Length: 64
Image (cartoon, rainbow, N blue to C red; front, side, top):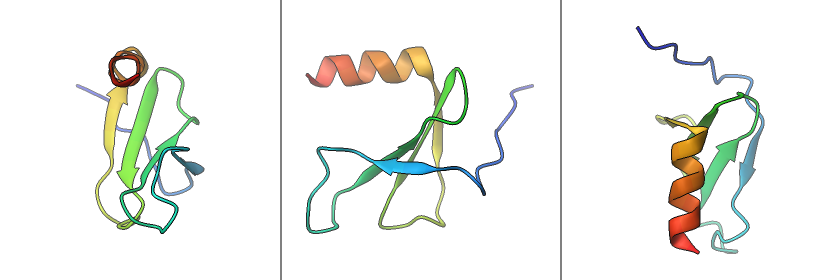
């Protein structure tokens, strides 16, 4: 069984590549070792995607 972290008190940070006008923003949280929660800043109460840190690192590297 997978453990889903409690995100209600998570400290989110916006991507430095996000749109300056407040749209198209991705936020992540660094509070969970080995995991990276990701959410849409336009819908902070909506769902968050939680991925393994290694998978997130590979995703970010492929975008560069």
